Image 1 (cartoon, helix red, strand yellow):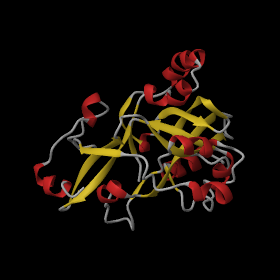
Image 2: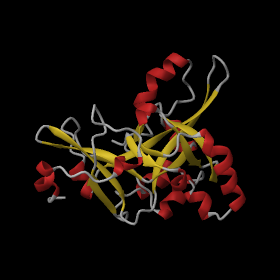
Image 3: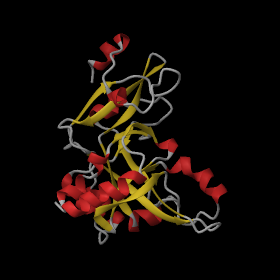
Image 4: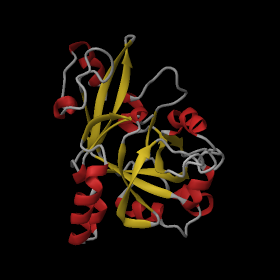
Length: 257
């Protein structure tokens, strides 16, 4: 699954910079940047951080959104709190069927840019966190869904999103080996070409888009172990949290990656 990420304002400006609109970039930094929780050296989706996403409605100017999609049909704060933690991720295989996602996958697709993500590996009844990033250190474009929710109790508005996941392949198939899951998972990472198709409102997901989504073999990843992300040894949202930490007992296992 994808519950832990590293992301920065620099990473989330990727699409705006691609458009070379300097005025928009300055405006994003000055107006939207302060509204986010950035930088996030390590953030758990369960804390529902406010970040930037690029949507099909405006592919080059982002909006502030909270991680954890709130479907438009949620009717109360109580229901919102109940569903929030279960919509951090959306399985690409079933998003057209799930009530929380089936409207968004057709009408509200978005991209969430991150510097990398964290995943836990199980070995000898222990868990070891890895930081996974693009080999060329460019930001990763994660496929996501978003929603615009109006709180019926006070009229307040929350934009929110869910990261789309797929079956883990290659290196990720070895790292994400949670024995409680039927298969390894990983976020659905988009190539530059697929970014544009993912955001194209004219493309129907089931008929035109789903078959184009690959297992990301063309995106080269690199990984290393890091310090604990849970419990008493967790150091929090600090820059060094993604630095390599070597676990001697894990070295023979890592050689097989």
